[in-house]
Length: 41
Image (cartoon, rainbow, N blue to C red):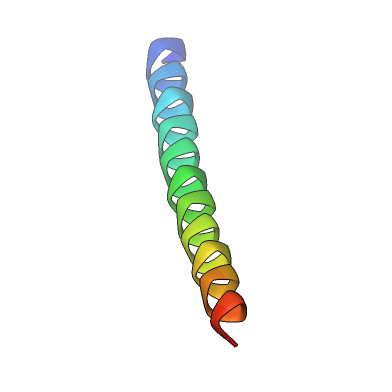
């Protein structure tokens, strides 16, 4: 039972990490695009 809980915890952390990474990457791209547009105006 304890092993199953541990595996679940690892899985949840893995998902949270990947989602966070995706969000951070998306934000970086959006911020970069805004800067590129701001330079043209």
